[in-house]
Image (cartoon, rainbow, N blue to C red; front, top):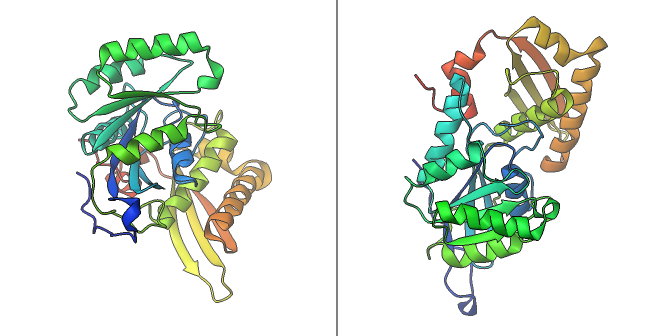
Length: 313
């Protein structure tokens, strides 16, 4: 269920009109561009992005302020046919996020269209009562007539209240979506302070940033059996922060791949993560990464709790 939050009344003037707020579940197949779109809406990085499918593992909330509205986007894991315990937890999390929202936004990759997981999601949405909008992504790569045909086909299956065509990569059409949401969400006070862009704890965001760099560096060599946790966070007197993180893998062979020859790979991952964390935190970061083998961590309830997922029995 959606966590109860203290409401926040922003400062407004009479001519601005009443404030609006609400939760929007961003769902879709894996690699449809949900995290990229969320970061575009929020105007900052709150969800990690990689070309590896199923990068997002738990619901990440990104908070966008647009006109008089606070729009809380819930970036859900990509929905697909689960095979492992972790897969089942991710898909359950995605559907749970959808059912907790005020409005559902279905994102479809225009290049891939409606097939496979996208078709199954459309069927599943028939059982969900919330209002739904359709967003076709990557429109810069598809002919207009094909986009119109795709939109018509999707609307034949589900009664979407609106259809939008966007490019999460370059921002085309994204303001139209925000305009619509700002006036459609219920009137009411805001849930978060005006300058807050996510409810993700900084320790967890830091772990996600490192996991992204891990995926980008080893997307072909390293399977999904890896997980990052922030074990230590120390604010130092000189204004810097010392962060210690552990990368969990399942086998010694994966540990060797992650470390690389002479530690070259782990140094590159650490350097990339440290640079981005320094930019986000606006302070120097001393990042220390350790790689540990934990066989079958994907069956450990504690690891699921760290990821913000319920452990499926």
